[in-house]
Image (cartoon, rainbow, N blue to C red):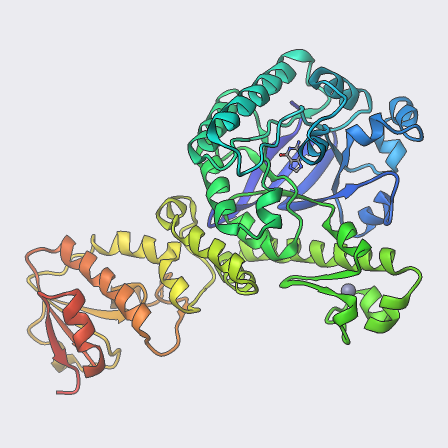
Length: 489
Ligand code: GUN
Ligand code: ZN
């Protein structure tokens, strides 16, 4: 296997990485536009100028094409497509998922993908539909695993990388087991398969469960491709889970239907009066002109692809800055199904905390969901280790006089949703870099859990909380043993 994957920066379980080999490099996360040689709305060479470093095409289409089969075999894919970046080929499994059968064997597609000099080849995995009964999922998974192992044993893999897809339907234990097994077998490039039906039906909560299960089994050093994911509204969410590569025909399929992509959903050009995008296509046309242009499909594909690539860059920047949660939050509010996916992801917060980085540029509180963020979990794991002495004051107000702290061994301030903090931590992350609006119930509730952790770590300390009367009942309800005083008395 020739491509190597290096992780450079992280945020949540997302990463910026470098996939390299054979003199080519691909920055991840990245999008591989799907190239259909028969369509070619935007040429791979044009894509390269737009910043595309890798594309994916369907080997099955090449193998059945009178026009392209021989050329690809003679000249190789790079020359046939006129693209010198990384070229991945899919096996025909997608046709398998749509038509139920393909006229090619695993050995044949692998030999063909090698013969046309693909950089990343894919065996003929079975993309088991999510609503398949377990017994059938197990049978198909066994076949997929046999084919992956057959592929591993078949040829020397010096000139390409062999992708090992993770299948297993909606059975999370099977997804996890499969991920673990493939990692143990040494695979370094693993797509997560058969998720297209989930995305098409907006089943983002289940998508999150499936991806998190597969990721739990996969080694963190594996480069993970989310098969068939190409709408920019979900990149932040998928990257937060640790997906590195996406592939998309969406930019072209949507264009065919006259649909205009944005990072928060798509619109039909018929329903648009204004174009909210500064790309050359949108700058040069009104919505009406674009809709009525004889070149509509190509122009719209151009716009769609640019929007998609721009979002990939936005996600990369968010990882660098450690603000990926903010971007996930923003994107997932554009549709309730995405919000459900986001909330499902937050349910994995303890597991994500272990992967997340220690410090970030900032933490912006954006409502209830922010209370479940990894930074809060991490802070509350730490706060129990602070020492509070025999008596401790927790002051909700930051403006207290020395005299008011007399008689206490230790003094803490309160920054919800994190919890209590000593003055020494005022400038450190997350206390110093978090911005919150006026206290609300959700954050105070979560902050009180932080107080509970401090109390657990200091079981012999007598704690007094001073706050405004409005919070007293809530605090007494969550922390019944603590003494609560009105900060103005
Ligand atoms: N394209 C979309 N989903 C899949 C999948 O599960 N397997 C393969 N090989 N290609 C896909
Ligand atoms: Zn545009």
